Image 1 (tube, helix red, strand yellow):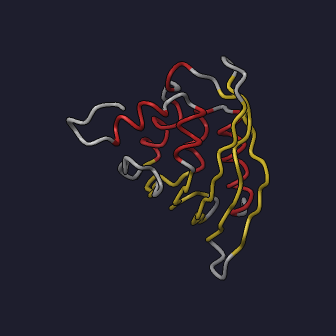
Image 2 (cartoon, helix red, strand yellow):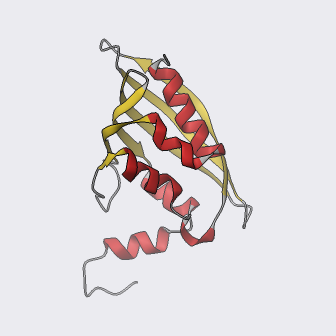
Image 3 (cartoon, helix red, strand yellow):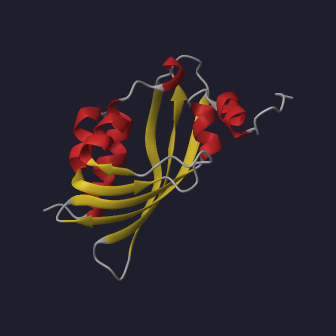
Length: 149
């Protein structure tokens, strides 16, 4: 059986290299994945099916990110199911050549080789910039009726 560290490493490498169709298989059938730093507060992903949709959705803005996980530090905790992983996705936007770094911290509970819970703290500004969505994120955060200046 895979250790929590091994499962985490397969996840972040799979996010970068694919195959994306296989990523949901790293999660339990019923799971709970949140993105607490996301400014639009998306609902949790609660099932393997929802995660499959999440991982296989077309990329925003027709951008392709060539990325790799870097600076990985995995902290074990007193609970053998729980790890805290610090890392960054680093790479380049294929269409523009723009370099990016997206810092992340994941707090994960992994039981019997499957992720049953994850809180994914991903820098929302760096991520939106890499995906070419910074303007749309800022627009979504503005109160209705305000201008874009």
